[in-house]
Amino acid sequence: MIEVQNLSRRYGHQLAVDGVSFTCAPGTVTGFLGPNGAGKSTTLRMLCGLTPPSSGTATVGGVRFRDLPNPGYRVGVLLDASAQHAGRTGREVLALSARVLGVDARRVDALMELVGLPRSAARKRVRGYSLGMRQRLGIAHALLGDPPVLVLDEPANGLDPEGIRWMRDLLRERADRGGTVLLSSHLLHEVEAVADRLVMIVNGRVRAAGPKDELLAAADGVVVRSSDRVALEGALRGAGIAWTPSTDGALIARTEPAAVGLAAAGAGVALTELRAAGAGRLEELFLSLTREGAVPAGPGTVREEVAAR
Amino acid sequence: MSAVTVTSPAASEPVPRSAADRRPPLLRLTRVELRKAVDTRAGLWLLIVIGALGVVLVVVRLLAGPRSERTLPSIVETTQLPFGLLLPVLGILLITSEWSQRTALTTFALVPHRERVVTAKLLAMTVLAVLMTVASLLASFVGFAVGRTAGTTSGGWDLSAGSVAELLLGQVLNMLLGAGFGLLLLSSAAAIVLSFALPTAWSLVSSLVPALRDEARWLDTARTMSPLFDPTSPAMDGQAWARLAVSLLVWLVVPMAAGLFRLHRREVS
Figure 1 (cartoon, chains in turn yellow, brown):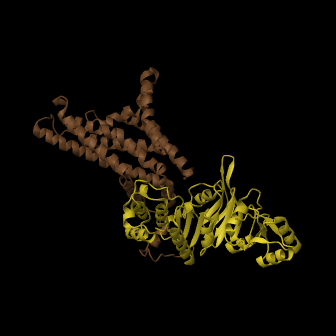
Figure 2 (cartoon, rainbow over the protein chains, first blue to last red; figure 1 turned 45 degrees about the horizontal axis):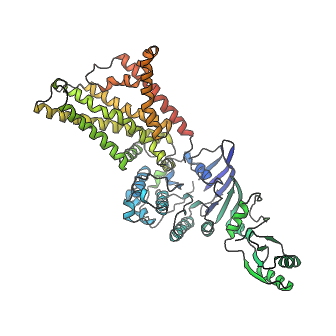
Figure 3 (cartoon, chains in turn red, yellow; figure 1 turned 90 degrees about the horizontal axis):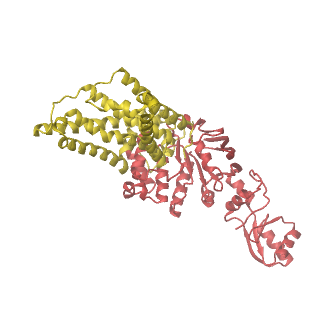
């Protein structure tokens, strides 16, 4: 269980994180989304006791991270896969931390195997690792103490599609076994595939939080396009269908595809595209929420504008 | 804390779950820090170079200079030279590499009680300084024994336990002096430069300004510590200890305390 309450962090005059609150329950994967510089990493560092908050609290299992006697057994942390000594071998990085935790060295080998780092890679110095290999090493590091809670900052960064799928399965499995997973990402599709809940922050503030399905339902719509856009707008207006213009000339209608098709047929408008805005829904939501002046939203909030792809 | 246990089947090696409620013992952290000092090429080679320099100097001392000066105490004094220069650097690097290599992020995520990590590092340094100094003493003894058999040295085995103890203390303090600068600045380059430049500048200024000469005898670590490294000099008297304590207060205790204070509140990223 992760509880973040009113967490803020000020750098000089700038509020990097501004009153962020959310909860991650056991058995769930929470996707922590936001554009670059939104305050995701700062929030996660505050959660892990690495950045002192200006105000607010963050606890894991009801305990502040800094008060955990041996946090490696409670929270697996991967904040920056590149933050490892370039001159140590991958295995040595794990072996050092295993010593700190008092975990048997055999677990190190088992974990290297689990994350797909073969023996040859284990002996290589981290300097020679690709970003994807560093992420795998970082995941193994986070799993050393077999903790019920995982906090991962951009873990899919640098992983190939196969690696992303592997990680998604791993996180899903841990959550299904009662674990709590919090992962940040800007790879929206990855989060959409694995997360049960979403927390979206923009400019240091939570803009949307809730179960993924509810948030996505709010983002649903129909993408419709015609070479005669004025006629299409008239047809929709005539049928009483609400719509918003997308950035690339299409319209996003807030209804079912069939209703749009009927309206267009009735008005004699030829359509060049008609589809549910399903694919990349999260990205649309993401873009709309991160746009300047977006309305702070909760689950089910109707948005002013949707950017379609 | 909920009693959820999540076990990965593939990593079936069990973890000692009861350990979750116990802090890692300081001894274990010290061992880890010792291992960190030697598990990279850079760290290992720095140690090897320091040791090799010591051995080279023993040989040089056995062959060069007037025979009357090739005594055991003077050989021992010579071998301390590379240590005096490089142990502070080692002390600095053992602290600052956590920042230059950004491993502080994982170190403090595993041990959030940062002062315990620092304590373990200081203990590890103490062990290293003692081991290195003992090794240098052994090299001196072997060299002296060889030289004595070959008839190239003079004097006998006259090295008092007191001067050996002073030597050990001196080198431990030497390394900790570096650690203090490292902890205060958290930057390898800045700490190395300043740890050499500041005491040297102070020595220079105090030797040029007559009014500061008396203060210098109390604050210049080069002067207050030199009796520790010189087995040929008489044992330290009360005033010498007092001067040493005052100089260490300024150059060791104050930087270290300030560094610890800052580290406690500092953001690690």
